[in-house]
Image (cartoon, rainbow, N blue to C red):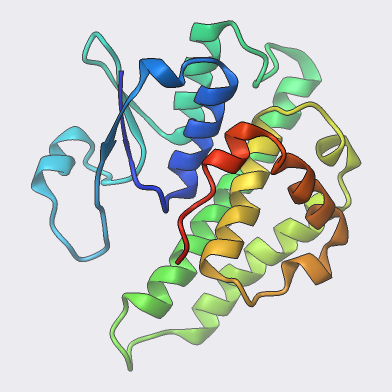
Length: 203
């Protein structure tokens, strides 16, 4: 299998963590890819018109999009337990992950607004609104002991990626001081090899 990725992508990191946890990391060839707003990448657009990372290309040549769907595919392949099979726990995990993915999307948009949009065209209120979505999402998880103290599953993996991306791109945002329970959770998960190995490089 081949996975398009960037070491800076929290979405690709999510898949890397899952692959390590599931014992599939050695079965995946990692193919670096660069995508950026306003920059054409026709080769990658032929793989996915959305130009998003990551994409998994199976041994049969099938293209699987979206980090959650890729994790679900790998989890099924390995017979893993990163995503509950059925019942209330499954829907809770999927809902948590939807929130996490939305937080990552908002953080990425804030990054683009600050670093990519030309000076004079930046919309501060729009950026503030998106940052508030990520920030209040952290506040919600701060008060979710069932996630913070639960099994290492897709919710915890996604949350690790949110906090790691906050460190990577928004180092001065102060999330640790604001959310001590998330800080303790993050420090604990960094003891896992899958989490430690996949930390983004220094910005």
